[in-house]
Image 1 (cartoon, rainbow, N blue to C red):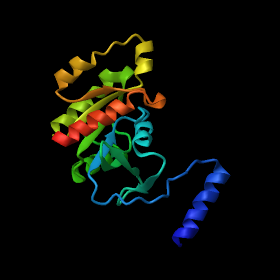
Image 2: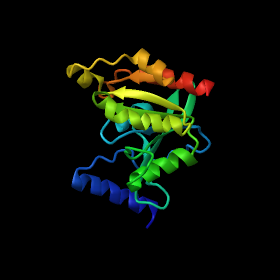
Image 3: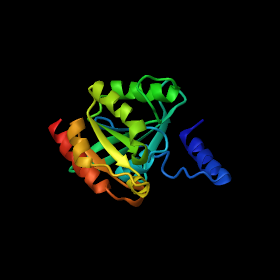
Image 4: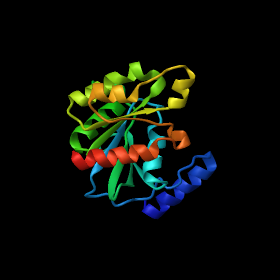
Length: 196
């Protein structure tokens, strides 16, 4: 099937089924760009942050040899363009699901310049073990505590500076859905990759 027919079928399908695929079939030339990978449990706001870093135009494709989708886009951080990759949700580097295996393989094979671990701040205790695993794998990790507004509503108080000192890595709080903290995240990523 030609690419034009496939594109037309995707558009018709999106209209019939009410699925927004805007921009998902736009191919971007990201070859040669350094990579920044987003990882984390499902439903922590990774995709929201991915969209903030890349804009609307992304490429969604199956990871080679699998049926697992990985989203890739181009984003400018500081004065430099990067390939931004949104991975399937994972709970551990000790993989059980195919999605987790894809994310682990991607982290180990594609040598990202930075790994942004996004966690749901209100579940910080349950999600920090993956942060530790990523650090132990010697990956360049930045921790993002997302959905901070809900954590604060629950009465959770997280000392970001102390957590950053204890983990010896950048820690940023965000409410990505409201675009809060995203500019700071970009600044910290820019500084992090420039010294990495």
